[in-house]
Image 1 (cartoon, helix red, strand yellow):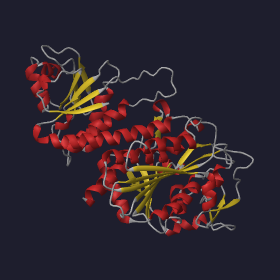
Image 2 (cartoon, one colour; image 1 turned 120 degrees about the vertical axis):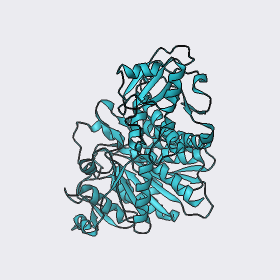
Image 3 (tube, one colour; image 1 turned 30 degrees about the horizontal axis):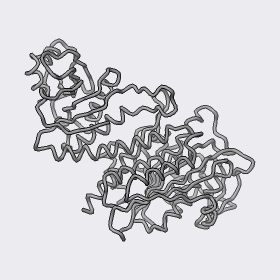
Image 4 (tube, helix red, strand yellow; image 1 turned 45 degrees about the vertical axis):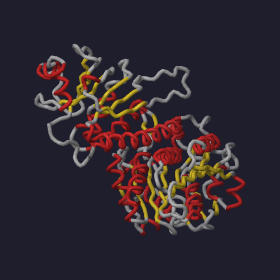
Length: 497
């Protein structure tokens, strides 16, 4: 997708479609007023006959525009004529781009950055136009013989007055980096498990490292992990014919000796549950168990693309979890890299086994903070649904910073408690801990397990099991939480400036 900031008068912007806003009670946005005056009051006539009431998210496409270089006008309802909330603005943008998927529209000019949104400037509004439009235009075609996509939109112009051009341009560039990071994460996650193996994911990381001078990538093989004593991680991969990989992405954009931000993403490229086999219905969606790892790659790409003045380490433990004669069995005891022993009561609670060794490995980078993200527990989906990701951590300041970034990014989080009482549920008679805590508070006990390997640094855990992909007719990866993590990094960079 090609984006640009346009300051020319609307009537001089040739395009396939121009997007303008209309309010309830027959009121027009500034751009809609200008267009109405130059098109023989066309918009006013449409409103007066009741084709659109102006409610938030309503759309009407006008296909014939008299005496104009503009081929079409899309009217988008914005509700009452007052500053709207950020979420309502996102709804307007989504409605607009979704209305333009099927028509043969290639070039679009969007005037909606002029709309008043509570506590949001031209930069934020322009950024969201890019993110929302790119997200809607994404369509997976990699394994289809017909590569034709539903959306034909190729060029998006964002109109802005000259005094707001710098802000709009900054927002466009940030939005483009985030959108491309989201697209990378979605594409990797949507690939089937027979293509996106741990080796394939590692190869994509190496390819990404070759695109940016400040980003280097290295891969630990199983022999390297064995030498480090990563018994928990390696126990998960024993049932697979695909060798595990521990992918390290090292972005050095900050001062040489500044402590890095470490992002750890679960990279289970397929999870059948191991010996504790999952039900067959819906098991195909377990290719999405590597969405955390995909999001780390997407976030590192966005950070490198924006040239953020930070040091960031991305760690992605990649493996499969399959049943086999050599696979983990319920009751097995494994020794983690930290030396702590773990009784594997359920082999389908494998994500925490590959993450715990990776968290221990993260200590060598002397991190400022560590954030792990994982499609870790079905319990999170039960507790929070598909709107927010779960947040738990051992540092209030870090958690508050992530919550603030989630609000700006419109990538919601909800914090759950990590109280000491929950640790009691992980007791084992035969090892230092069990890998599950029973049927109660599954999301919290999973985080409690991970917290035992994050005691030496500030740490937060994002459970994205309910937000990383959609099921049903719109099945597909969402790319979350790339927007959240990237906004967190943008905020950190701004704070350090």
